[in-house]
Length: 302
Image (tube, rainbow, N blue to C red; front, side, top):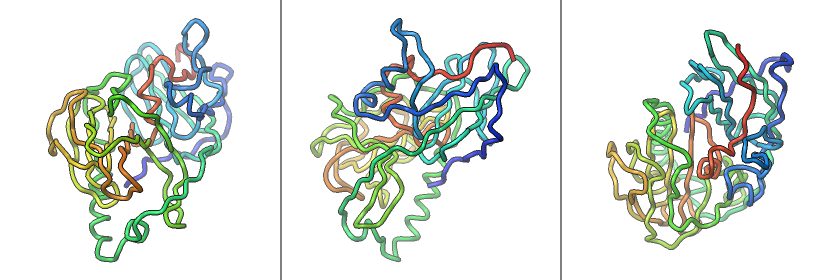
C-alpha cells in the first residue's frame, strides 16, 4: 500500500503566538474506548490541548475563515470549522509543521509527535501468509497498487462524526499500532483495531459512502473499502461474506458483510481500519465524541 507523504519538518522555531504544543496521546485501553484521553476535555466539557497523543492520532486546529489546510504536499478544505490533521502511524517522532490558509494569509504551527509507544505482538499464521510464494507476488503487487489509489479519491465529505460502530454491540478494541511479528518475521505495525466476534456476525458500514473495493485480497481476505469523501476511508477485513459490490452506495449502519477468518488471521474477527488524508489513524478516535479530539493552535487573525 502507498504510504502518505511524510513531510520533513522545518527547524524547530515558532512565534509566541504559535506556541509549541506537545502531542503525545494517551494510549491506554480506557483512552481508546473514548475518543481520546480524559485530559482531552476540561471539567466544563470544553476541548483542551492534549497532554498526550501519539503517531496514529488526530488533532484539530479550529478557526474562522479557513480556506485550506495543508500537511506536506497534501491539501484539503476545512471540515466543521477546523483543519483536522491525521498523524500517520509511521510518522517519525519530532517536530511536524501544520499549515492552513485563512483570511488570505498562510499560518503555520509546529507540533511535536511523540516516540512510537506501541507494544510488540507475536503471531503464528499459515506459512504462506508470512512468506508468500513467488507465484502470488504479482497478485500482491497489483492489489497494493489498487488499494493505494483509494486513499486520495477526494470528493465532498459525506460523513459526520462520530462514526457508527461496525459491530453491534461493539466488543473491546485491541492491538492498534502494535508491531507485528509473524512467524518470527517483523512486518508493518497493525494499522487498525481487531474486534472479536463469531463467524457470521453482521458487519455494518460506519458511515454512508461508496464502496471503493469489495474483493478477496491476499493478506486481508474478503475486504471492503468504503470512500466517505473528504479523503476518509474505512476498511473491513477478513470477512466471511461480502454483501456489497464495487461502486455501490451504502448507508450508515447497512450490513456490508459478515465476520470471518479469511486472509492472514489467527481466528475469526473483524479488522476495522481508518485512513484520513492517507494517514493511518486509530479508529477509536473517530468512534467517540469529536469534541474531545484535541485542539491545537488558536483562532487569532493571520
